[in-house]
Image (spheres, one colour):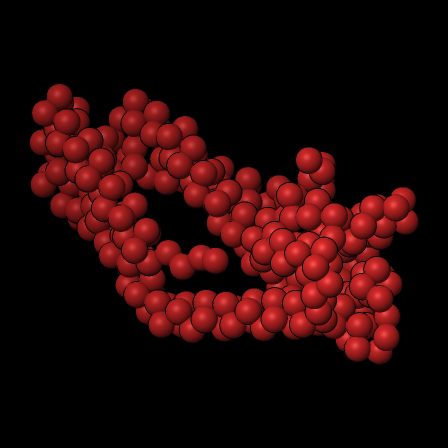
Length: 247
């Protein structure tokens, strides 16, 4: 299996965000739900949960960006084939086209550069695309590689394969944008609802602290608040799954 390319740029940003959000949320829970130093044990739990969630979001963001670049690259491949280049030559021409909008150290362009180098060493174009699919985040690269492999082996129309793949990906992107536009208001409502329990507890802690006093510094209160917190966690998880929209 080909070695995965090194991610560059702001690769650490999501880690900092996850740690910061997790620490802040854990401290808030310790203050609102337990009012105890022992409640700070929630911090590593929250950091772990936010780390996993943010990592997943970052992966999805990179996947969508890779898909966006790939469909643009297919467009350049198609144009190169139309003017008479072979597919092997079109790989390099496609890279030149991508350089008009991307920097050379962009991971996507690094992957295309590896394609060129492997072909220069004698590897067939369908094989290098198959190897690229093994390291790519975007599943469309794998789908394209499979169809291309069959087309090259059976003498199929490669240009038609590229056009069809490009159109399918663009249709998927358009559908995803439409779904997200429809779900946007629901996602906003879900975020507001998830914040409401914390807002109510903050209000009670600041203005009606005696009302919550029986729930702190005793075993029964700790159990009640823990159960409430667990129920809140699973409900939030369910809401996230319902409103999630991904490739």
